[in-house]
Length: 285
Image (tube, rainbow, N blue to C red):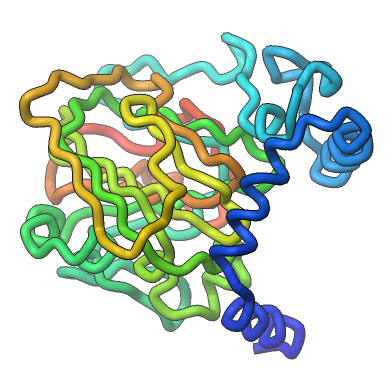
Protein backbone atom coordinates (compact mmCIF):
# COMPACT_ATOMS: atom_id res chain seq x y z
CA UNK A 1 0.00 0.00 0.00
CA UNK A 2 1.32 3.43 -0.92
CA UNK A 3 2.05 5.91 1.86
CA UNK A 4 -0.79 8.25 0.88
CA UNK A 5 -3.32 5.41 0.86
CA UNK A 6 -1.99 4.11 4.21
CA UNK A 7 -2.46 7.53 5.82
CA UNK A 8 -5.94 7.88 4.30
CA UNK A 9 -7.02 4.51 5.73
CA UNK A 10 -5.44 5.21 9.13
CA UNK A 11 -7.24 8.54 9.36
CA UNK A 12 -10.59 6.85 8.77
CA UNK A 13 -9.96 4.51 11.69
CA UNK A 14 -9.48 7.39 14.13
CA UNK A 15 -12.05 9.89 12.83
CA UNK A 16 -15.43 10.13 14.65
CA UNK A 17 -17.27 8.73 11.62
CA UNK A 18 -20.84 9.00 12.90
CA UNK A 19 -20.36 12.45 14.42
CA UNK A 20 -18.97 13.81 11.14
CA UNK A 21 -21.81 12.20 9.19
CA UNK A 22 -24.44 13.73 11.52
CA UNK A 23 -22.73 17.10 11.06
CA UNK A 24 -22.83 16.64 7.28
CA UNK A 25 -26.54 15.76 7.53
CA UNK A 26 -27.17 19.17 9.10
CA UNK A 27 -24.87 21.12 6.79
CA UNK A 28 -26.41 19.71 3.62
CA UNK A 29 -29.82 20.97 4.74
CA UNK A 30 -28.74 24.55 5.47
CA UNK A 31 -30.71 26.95 3.27
CA UNK A 32 -28.34 29.94 3.39
CA UNK A 33 -28.21 31.43 -0.11
CA UNK A 34 -24.71 32.87 0.33
CA UNK A 35 -23.37 29.43 1.22
CA UNK A 36 -25.09 27.73 -1.71
CA UNK A 37 -23.68 30.33 -4.11
CA UNK A 38 -20.19 29.38 -2.91
CA UNK A 39 -20.64 25.62 -2.78
CA UNK A 40 -22.88 24.59 -5.69
CA UNK A 41 -21.02 26.18 -8.65
CA UNK A 42 -17.72 24.86 -7.24
CA UNK A 43 -19.15 21.34 -6.78
CA UNK A 44 -20.61 21.31 -10.31
CA UNK A 45 -17.27 22.37 -11.82
CA UNK A 46 -15.12 20.13 -9.63
CA UNK A 47 -17.08 16.94 -10.32
CA UNK A 48 -18.25 17.85 -13.85
CA UNK A 49 -21.92 17.41 -12.98
CA UNK A 50 -24.14 17.41 -16.09
CA UNK A 51 -26.94 19.74 -15.04
CA UNK A 52 -28.57 19.52 -18.50
CA UNK A 53 -29.87 16.09 -17.47
CA UNK A 54 -31.62 17.51 -14.40
CA UNK A 55 -35.34 18.22 -14.42
CA UNK A 56 -34.39 21.65 -13.08
CA UNK A 57 -30.98 22.51 -14.60
CA UNK A 58 -30.60 25.82 -12.72
CA UNK A 59 -28.58 25.30 -9.53
CA UNK A 60 -29.97 28.55 -8.11
CA UNK A 61 -33.40 26.97 -7.78
CA UNK A 62 -32.23 24.39 -5.19
CA UNK A 63 -32.90 25.48 -1.61
CA UNK A 64 -30.22 23.25 -0.02
CA UNK A 65 -27.24 21.13 -1.00
CA UNK A 66 -29.21 17.97 -0.28
CA UNK A 67 -32.02 19.00 -2.63
CA UNK A 68 -29.40 19.61 -5.32
CA UNK A 69 -27.58 16.34 -4.59
CA UNK A 70 -30.78 14.26 -4.82
CA UNK A 71 -32.05 16.21 -7.84
CA UNK A 72 -34.57 14.59 -10.16
CA UNK A 73 -33.64 13.86 -13.76
CA UNK A 74 -35.57 14.76 -16.90
CA UNK A 75 -38.14 12.14 -17.79
CA UNK A 76 -36.25 10.89 -20.86
CA UNK A 77 -32.73 11.22 -19.40
CA UNK A 78 -32.43 7.52 -18.50
CA UNK A 79 -34.31 5.14 -20.83
CA UNK A 80 -35.05 1.81 -19.16
CA UNK A 81 -34.20 -1.29 -21.21
CA UNK A 82 -37.64 -2.56 -22.31
CA UNK A 83 -36.91 -6.28 -22.75
CA UNK A 84 -39.10 -8.41 -20.48
CA UNK A 85 -36.18 -10.56 -19.38
CA UNK A 86 -33.72 -7.73 -18.76
CA UNK A 87 -32.18 -6.73 -15.43
CA UNK A 88 -31.04 -3.09 -15.45
CA UNK A 89 -28.63 -0.98 -13.48
CA UNK A 90 -30.47 0.57 -10.51
CA UNK A 91 -28.18 3.63 -10.44
CA UNK A 92 -25.59 5.68 -12.26
CA UNK A 93 -22.21 4.43 -11.10
CA UNK A 94 -19.27 2.14 -11.77
CA UNK A 95 -18.99 -1.61 -11.22
CA UNK A 96 -16.62 -2.28 -8.36
CA UNK A 97 -16.86 -6.08 -8.64
CA UNK A 98 -19.45 -8.60 -9.83
CA UNK A 99 -19.79 -12.33 -10.39
CA UNK A 100 -20.68 -15.49 -8.52
CA UNK A 101 -20.78 -15.87 -4.76
CA UNK A 102 -18.41 -18.61 -3.60
CA UNK A 103 -20.68 -20.44 -1.13
CA UNK A 104 -20.93 -17.56 1.40
CA UNK A 105 -17.99 -15.41 0.25
CA UNK A 106 -18.42 -12.25 -1.84
CA UNK A 107 -15.37 -10.86 -3.67
CA UNK A 108 -14.56 -7.30 -2.58
CA UNK A 109 -11.15 -6.60 -4.12
CA UNK A 110 -7.84 -8.37 -4.68
CA UNK A 111 -7.03 -10.20 -1.47
CA UNK A 112 -10.35 -9.34 0.19
CA UNK A 113 -13.71 -11.12 0.45
CA UNK A 114 -16.50 -10.90 3.00
CA UNK A 115 -19.32 -13.02 4.34
CA UNK A 116 -22.67 -12.75 2.56
CA UNK A 117 -24.45 -13.81 5.75
CA UNK A 118 -22.75 -11.01 7.67
CA UNK A 119 -23.62 -8.52 4.92
CA UNK A 120 -27.29 -9.47 5.31
CA UNK A 121 -27.31 -8.75 9.04
CA UNK A 122 -25.97 -12.11 10.28
CA UNK A 123 -29.10 -13.80 8.98
CA UNK A 124 -28.24 -17.45 8.36
CA UNK A 125 -31.62 -18.06 6.73
CA UNK A 126 -30.88 -15.40 4.11
CA UNK A 127 -27.33 -16.66 3.71
CA UNK A 128 -28.81 -20.02 2.67
CA UNK A 129 -31.21 -18.40 0.20
CA UNK A 130 -28.42 -16.55 -1.62
CA UNK A 131 -25.67 -19.16 -1.19
CA UNK A 132 -23.71 -19.61 -4.44
CA UNK A 133 -25.77 -16.82 -6.00
CA UNK A 134 -24.65 -13.77 -7.94
CA UNK A 135 -23.69 -10.24 -6.87
CA UNK A 136 -22.92 -6.87 -8.42
CA UNK A 137 -21.36 -4.01 -6.44
CA UNK A 138 -21.92 -0.54 -7.95
CA UNK A 139 -20.12 2.55 -6.61
CA UNK A 140 -21.73 6.00 -6.91
CA UNK A 141 -19.30 8.90 -7.20
CA UNK A 142 -20.17 12.47 -6.11
CA UNK A 143 -21.01 13.45 -9.71
CA UNK A 144 -23.60 10.70 -10.16
CA UNK A 145 -27.39 10.78 -9.91
CA UNK A 146 -28.19 9.55 -6.40
CA UNK A 147 -31.69 8.18 -6.58
CA UNK A 148 -31.97 4.39 -6.62
CA UNK A 149 -34.37 2.53 -8.92
CA UNK A 150 -35.58 -1.04 -9.34
CA UNK A 151 -33.45 -3.28 -11.57
CA UNK A 152 -36.43 -5.57 -12.18
CA UNK A 153 -40.09 -5.81 -11.12
CA UNK A 154 -40.24 -6.67 -7.42
CA UNK A 155 -42.50 -7.11 -4.41
CA UNK A 156 -41.00 -6.00 -1.10
CA UNK A 157 -40.89 -8.67 1.61
CA UNK A 158 -38.53 -7.31 4.27
CA UNK A 159 -36.14 -4.48 5.18
CA UNK A 160 -33.22 -4.72 7.62
CA UNK A 161 -31.19 -1.82 8.99
CA UNK A 162 -27.74 -2.98 10.11
CA UNK A 163 -25.78 -0.39 12.15
CA UNK A 164 -22.04 -0.30 11.56
CA UNK A 165 -19.02 1.80 10.79
CA UNK A 166 -18.85 4.47 8.10
CA UNK A 167 -15.67 3.97 6.14
CA UNK A 168 -15.41 5.67 2.77
CA UNK A 169 -16.45 3.38 -0.10
CA UNK A 170 -14.10 4.86 -2.69
CA UNK A 171 -11.79 2.43 -4.55
CA UNK A 172 -8.75 3.08 -2.33
CA UNK A 173 -10.65 2.15 0.82
CA UNK A 174 -12.40 -0.84 -0.79
CA UNK A 175 -9.01 -2.23 -1.84
CA UNK A 176 -7.47 -1.85 1.62
CA UNK A 177 -10.12 -2.32 4.35
CA UNK A 178 -11.07 -5.99 4.82
CA UNK A 179 -14.79 -6.86 4.76
CA UNK A 180 -15.66 -3.20 4.25
CA UNK A 181 -19.23 -3.66 3.02
CA UNK A 182 -20.07 -6.08 5.83
CA UNK A 183 -18.69 -3.59 8.39
CA UNK A 184 -20.36 -0.38 7.20
CA UNK A 185 -23.89 0.63 8.13
CA UNK A 186 -26.36 -0.64 5.55
CA UNK A 187 -30.02 -1.06 4.65
CA UNK A 188 -30.96 -4.46 3.20
CA UNK A 189 -34.11 -4.48 1.03
CA UNK A 190 -35.49 -7.91 0.12
CA UNK A 191 -37.76 -8.49 -2.87
CA UNK A 192 -39.48 -11.33 -4.67
CA UNK A 193 -38.82 -10.87 -8.40
CA UNK A 194 -39.16 -12.76 -11.71
CA UNK A 195 -35.40 -13.36 -11.34
CA UNK A 196 -35.99 -15.05 -7.98
CA UNK A 197 -35.20 -13.63 -4.53
CA UNK A 198 -33.27 -10.36 -4.72
CA UNK A 199 -31.48 -8.30 -2.07
CA UNK A 200 -30.62 -4.66 -2.69
CA UNK A 201 -28.11 -3.53 -0.08
CA UNK A 202 -27.73 0.23 0.29
CA UNK A 203 -24.35 0.75 1.95
CA UNK A 204 -23.67 3.84 4.05
CA UNK A 205 -20.33 5.66 4.14
CA UNK A 206 -18.67 8.57 5.86
CA UNK A 207 -20.56 11.81 5.15
CA UNK A 208 -23.57 9.85 3.86
CA UNK A 209 -26.13 11.80 5.89
CA UNK A 210 -28.99 9.36 5.46
CA UNK A 211 -30.52 6.54 3.45
CA UNK A 212 -34.19 6.73 2.44
CA UNK A 213 -36.67 4.32 0.89
CA UNK A 214 -39.97 5.26 -0.73
CA UNK A 215 -42.07 3.07 1.55
CA UNK A 216 -40.40 4.04 4.83
CA UNK A 217 -38.83 7.46 4.37
CA UNK A 218 -35.54 8.11 6.18
CA UNK A 219 -34.23 4.83 7.59
CA UNK A 220 -31.00 6.29 8.96
CA UNK A 221 -30.33 8.43 10.95
CA UNK A 222 -30.74 7.50 13.71
CA UNK A 223 -28.00 4.89 13.45
CA UNK A 224 -28.58 3.12 16.78
CA UNK A 225 -26.71 0.00 17.87
CA UNK A 226 -29.29 -2.74 17.32
CA UNK A 227 -30.32 -4.35 14.05
CA UNK A 228 -33.85 -3.27 13.09
CA UNK A 229 -36.20 -5.32 10.97
CA UNK A 230 -39.49 -4.65 9.13
CA UNK A 231 -41.57 -7.36 7.46
CA UNK A 232 -44.13 -6.62 4.76
CA UNK A 233 -45.90 -9.98 4.44
CA UNK A 234 -49.32 -8.39 5.05
CA UNK A 235 -48.74 -5.43 2.72
CA UNK A 236 -48.60 -5.22 -1.05
CA UNK A 237 -45.62 -2.98 -1.84
CA UNK A 238 -44.49 -3.54 -5.40
CA UNK A 239 -42.41 -1.55 -7.88
CA UNK A 240 -41.88 -1.89 -11.61
CA UNK A 241 -38.47 -2.07 -13.26
CA UNK A 242 -37.07 1.45 -13.42
CA UNK A 243 -39.26 2.89 -10.65
CA UNK A 244 -37.54 4.86 -7.90
CA UNK A 245 -37.23 2.88 -4.65
CA UNK A 246 -34.89 5.01 -2.54
CA UNK A 247 -32.04 7.48 -2.43
CA UNK A 248 -28.71 8.30 -0.83
CA UNK A 249 -28.44 11.71 0.77
CA UNK A 250 -24.76 11.89 -0.23
CA UNK A 251 -23.12 9.10 -2.22
CA UNK A 252 -22.30 5.48 -1.55
CA UNK A 253 -22.67 1.94 -2.94
CA UNK A 254 -25.46 -0.42 -3.98
CA UNK A 255 -24.93 -4.19 -3.91
CA UNK A 256 -27.35 -6.39 -5.86
CA UNK A 257 -27.59 -10.04 -4.77
CA UNK A 258 -29.60 -12.75 -6.51
CA UNK A 259 -30.18 -16.40 -5.66
CA UNK A 260 -28.58 -19.00 -7.92
CA UNK A 261 -29.77 -20.23 -11.33
CA UNK A 262 -32.56 -17.78 -12.21
CA UNK A 263 -30.44 -14.98 -13.71
CA UNK A 264 -27.12 -14.23 -15.41
CA UNK A 265 -24.99 -11.11 -15.74
CA UNK A 266 -24.31 -9.84 -19.25
CA UNK A 267 -21.11 -11.30 -20.67
CA UNK A 268 -19.91 -7.81 -21.64
CA UNK A 269 -19.73 -6.55 -18.02
CA UNK A 270 -16.32 -5.68 -16.59
CA UNK A 271 -15.06 -4.44 -13.22
CA UNK A 272 -14.52 -0.68 -13.46
CA UNK A 273 -17.19 -0.27 -16.15
CA UNK A 274 -19.38 2.83 -15.81
CA UNK A 275 -23.14 2.34 -15.88
CA UNK A 276 -26.20 4.48 -16.38
CA UNK A 277 -29.53 3.86 -14.70
CA UNK A 278 -31.69 1.64 -16.92
CA UNK A 279 -28.80 0.06 -18.84
CA UNK A 280 -29.09 -3.71 -19.24
CA UNK A 281 -26.67 -5.55 -16.92
CA UNK A 282 -28.25 -9.00 -16.79
CA UNK A 283 -31.13 -11.19 -17.86
CA UNK A 284 -33.65 -13.55 -16.34
CA UNK A 285 -33.20 -17.18 -17.34
